[in-house]
Image 1 (cartoon, rainbow, N blue to C red):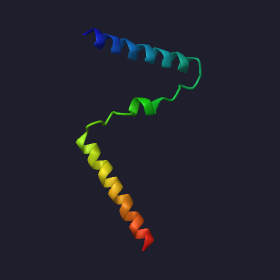
Image 2: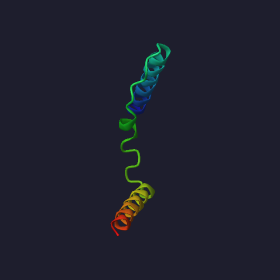
Image 3: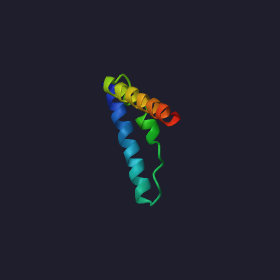
Image 4: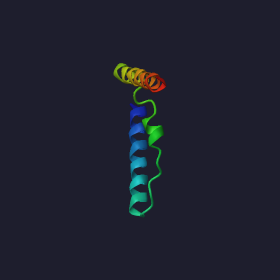
Length: 66
């Protein structure tokens, strides 16, 4: 329970910081890759998307070599 509260407080603090930066006219710091990283961990559907993408790229390479 305490960990959940700490995580919620941390999110609120980050949002307050972002809003302060926005109010001051400064650009927000882009850390989207860090926030996005790992969000699809152990997701079977995402793994299938990656597999199909790789297959498509390999097929494209073979087609372009012919």
